[in-house]
Length: 418
Image (cartoon, rainbow, N blue to C red):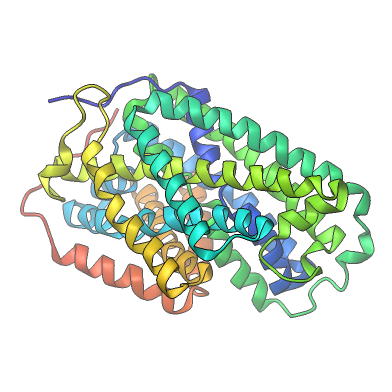
């Protein structure tokens, strides 16, 4: 049977991680959270930026010890057994099949808002982005890694230019009153920001394809944390400092920010940023998810049909082909019923928070060093607190989790450590 190729370097791993985490949230969430919590939204962003450090470190430790394409499902399986591992595999079915088209719609919607496109044209552009991501992922992880690295370099340069162009419009008086709506919206903002900070776990799904996972995974995640935290905090600080979140209609916060410094040219720059960020997010989401389903089917938790790799590119092509179905359903719902992006974001975000809780519980059991367990405890505590604020979206991980638990495997598979 064909196996996954070990070709990823730490630079390509960093590119894939940054592309996955630095997602479509930067286009809208600095504005949305500032509207919810006022300048106190900075507390939510700082909390998540600080949380990114122990989160990435914990996933790095788990990924180097269990370099398996199953990612969180493999960690939970090693810690709590096959039934729990299968439950996580089922939980993941509520993430990328919805999150990837939602991300595509955010980027395409940005372009559509700037160019005054119809809803149908926006959906078509989102479909084109998704098809491109599927095709590039089909061609192999090395090609995917190089593509993601190039995209990240472009995104970083454009975001730095955007922030620099608006710095002169920052006024410290815009940071007061600091908490005009109280502190409850800060908690809601933290829950919402999981959309902007999930993705650290995706490197775990690619662990089998690293040349030297023990050394390269920590390097990839370390660089990714520094780049993402600096870019996110720069954008949100300038957004609040210029009060661009309070300029008319919501939904195009970055466009307003860029327009402060670059005027009409800012619209084109923002469109390029939006498409690059959107594609980078989808690219890594799809890469990680396809490996997860492949790993789960290889173990027998999902149909064995998905355990076959392409003879030439050694990629899980059947999983990639299957993703066309949920992508089409989500895009169709948007085209026909105008389902809101807030709804599309809320449900997979709730599942991601539940997955992070399970990952940290596994880390507490599998990792023995006090610093490792303390990091997992911090991330688990904040994730639990954030879950309180997800509302009705908590039903999705509950239903998927119970379904996965009911479909218990009849065999035990010993975990592999390295």
